[in-house]
Length: 480
Image 1 (cartoon, rainbow, N blue to C red):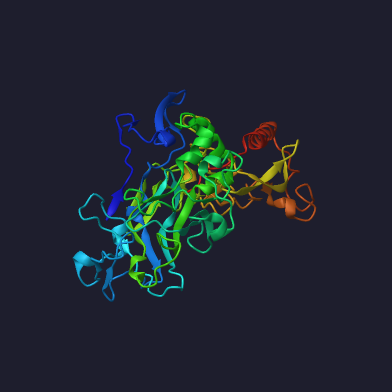
Image 2 (spheres, rainbow, N blue to C red; image 1 turned 60 degrees about the vertical axis):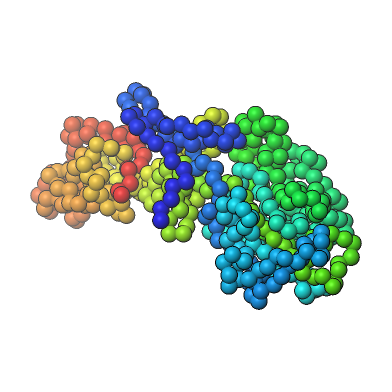
C-alpha cells in the first residue's frame, strides 16, 4: 500500500493548488514555483513541509507487560463508582467482548464505545504498571495537543515520555498525579504557569487526574498549542515569532520532535483514599482513543510524506535524500547539507544541495615567458557547454578536454585523462620538446635542434590560457 497523506498538485506553469492548512503551519506547503528571470523561465526553490495529519494511523503499538490486556482468562469488571454493578465482561476469544490495543486507534463514535482495557488490579498491593509505547520508526513533529481519552477513571499517577532516538533513551514530557508532591516530589503546575523562558520545563500537573466520578471528565492532555501560544499569541496569530524561534533554537525544535511516545500508567483511579481489597475488579485502565497530530519531519525539504511497506518516508526535494531528507544526494555535496529555514517569512529558504566539485586537476604553471616549467593542483575550470563533461571520470584529474585544455603541438586528448603526444614532444599537454630531457638540452651539440624559443603567438596563447585558468577556476557539474 502506498498512501500519500499530503498532496500538492502542479499544473500549467506549476502553480500550486493551494489548500487551507492549519494556521499554525501555513506557507510551507510549496517547494518550488516557476518564475521569469534574466535567464528565462527558472525554478524558484523554497522551504516546504508536509501537511499535518493524524499520526496514529502510521504507528506501531506495544504493551509492557505483553499479557496486560484483559480477556485471557476472561474477567468480569465492576464499575468504579458502584462496586455492585459488575456486568462488564472481557473475553479475548470473543470479538464482541475483546478489548485489544488496536481499539485505542479505531474510529470513534461507535455505540457501544470501543476501547483497550487492562487486567484488573488483582495483584494489589503490587503496583499495576503498564507501559504503552507508540513507535513510528520515523521522526515526527507534533503540531497539536496529544489527547488520551479514558473509558475507565483517569489514572491517579501517570507519566508521558518521549524518545528522539527510536526508543533507545527516554525523557519525560509531563507528569500527572492527583498529588504531585506525594507522587513525584514536584510542585503542581499547569501550562499556564509557563513562560517563554520556562517552556521547556518538565512539569507535574494535577488538572487531569481528578474528577473520577464525572462522566465526561475522561481526557488527559499534553498541551502543544498552549506552548506555541507563548510565542505566537493566544490565537496563534503571530506565527512569524514562533517560526523565528523554531528556526534558531534547536532545543525548542527538539522539544516538539519525537520518534516514539510512551505512556506509563502507574496507578489506576481508585475513587477513594483507601483501595477496596474486596473489590479489586473495580481498578483497571481502559483507553478508548489516543490522538497524536503531527507531520513527518523532513527538515523543510519535502512537502509530502509517503507510507509505503509499513514505513513512513519523506519525498525529498532540493537534491536531498534519506528518511528525513537529512543529507544531500550522491554527487550533490557541493556544500554542506543544511536544513531548510522558516526565514524569511513567508516562504523561507530552501538551502538546496548543489552538485559536487569534480576535484583537482593537474595543470601547468604558465610563467611570464610562456614556458610551462612546473605542475600545480588547481580546481577545474567550469565550462557547462563542454561535451566532455558527460563522459569524464570524476574520480580522476582532468588533464585535457579538447575544449579549453587542448593538447599542444599536435597532441591528441585520450579519454580526457592524458595527451597522446607526437614523437618529438612530451609533457602533460605535449608542451615540452623531447630534446629538453637529453644531455645538453635542446641547444646542445647533440640535439640537432636550435634552442626552444616559443613564438610570440605561442607565448600569447599560453598566457591567455593561464589567465583564464586562474580567473575562471570553479567546479565542473557532477557526473550522475
